[in-house]
Length: 193
Image (tube, rainbow, N blue to C red; front, side, top):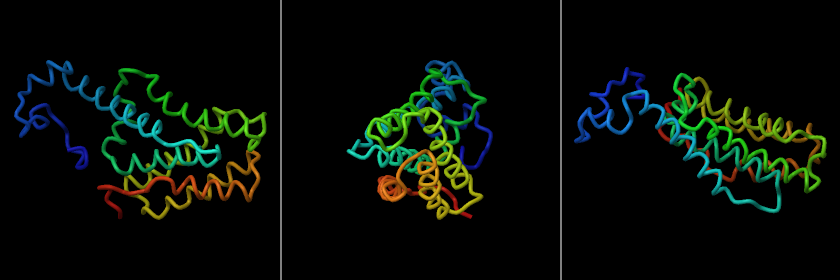
């Protein structure tokens, strides 16, 4: 239903599930509550994936690996990804989206402490810029305008961003290459054009 962008009704949603339409009202209060729960679940799953991304002794690699995990998760679950970023639906816990970004902020802070990035770098700003690169590429691939191969540009863009932020060029290139390859960038059921 999400993939075809058909209007979703409670009746079409429960068809073939063995539950009545009343279950949606009982458990979610209606379609708005259901969409809120689905959107929340997307961020809960993303946080769990980011939490499982192992930390290493290379915080720049770890920062990029978190971005790779984000892209991999989104492309493996493109319909859920679309709902996660549908701001016409409220989040049950609005801080859930911010919490996922906090993983990247902490990685930037580690990179500063390790001397890979200057102390003047604003961690939340750099983390947001890294997120934008991953999110932009993912959106363009998941919605079909661009082919999966453009994901390879992520490493180039992140390397340029992190060098500009102050990391050593050679060390940065190695860290980004390893981090970007930390998760398979599968496209799941995404239709490539």
